Image (tube, rainbow over the protein chains, first blue to last red):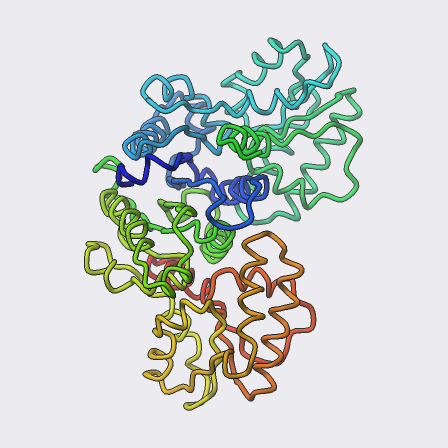
Length: 239
Length: 239
């Protein structure tokens, strides 16, 4: 952007493509949350779609740091464009959030902060299940932030349903949303039986599967991607 | 992108946000056309979402060249990122295509070439209606390219339905897709009655309205945005 244009317009930097459908889902949510009557009322964005980034969970499990290089490169390009804030459309990638923030002039929103913010109406010590990749669980930030907010984090592993979640996420990335939805339902039903008050869809692929689910259990279902979009719209003063 | 990463990955540059929903529609089409089993099989993209660009039609009618400055700025940022090719998700903005190409190292696809390419099965001299903004009509590139391809371009103005198209486009930008669909249907029905063999949805908002239409007339309906996505996927060798 030329400097004279940037003066009037804040640009939201988006690190996306992780996977690509999740970024489209985020943009859709961002657009529909914006109070706009015409194009010019919308938020300006710059999106770096970097699907070639190696699988985050695989790398975290192998103690391989290569995804950081891709994420860092995208964050640098966005900073060169003087974006006002950055958002990363992938929960697992937040494993590197602190290091990315350390080298970014623009603030980088944290998706878990947005998600947990949406639980404020729940009673303290409520059980909240984390639906996510294994990488996100190892990263540990959801557990820590839930504990800090006074909730009891529940891992699918402890109720025997992490494998369904792995399948759900893999199938969304392979465009088989219908089959993904059946695995999503198995996991959510088990959370309900285990006494959870809420589940956080803490992987940006899950809401795509959940939207195709019929017969949804009685749980507070938090879409971290939607909450992140709300944070962005609020920040850009349009909500 | 760091140079060592760019060596292995072609990046598609996208000028979007004109309007934002049309860009989401394009990305969705691009993703679903890509033969991918995992994130890493997808095309990498860099999207400049510049919704603040002044209304293209209004400016063309007023002989105001300001949109060129915005488009040019986005094209320059994408060139700085060494993208392999650029695509502009707005038909009307192609009024400035030639000038943008002149200052861009990366080739810029032309949406009308993609759209007209999809008509190759039609007989010569077939009537093809252009559903578009008034700005696109004044720009004249659809008429010229249709004539060069041996077809007879039909303007909605001549069958009294351009105002319905203006309303359709305005309503999509204001998120009222259902009402937009009724205006889209009126225009398409009139094209059918006027003996058109095909219509080109030559504004990226129209397919969003058309998807909400019931009872679609017997016409070849070309979605310029979809054809542009096909061109991009073909170019990036994934179709």
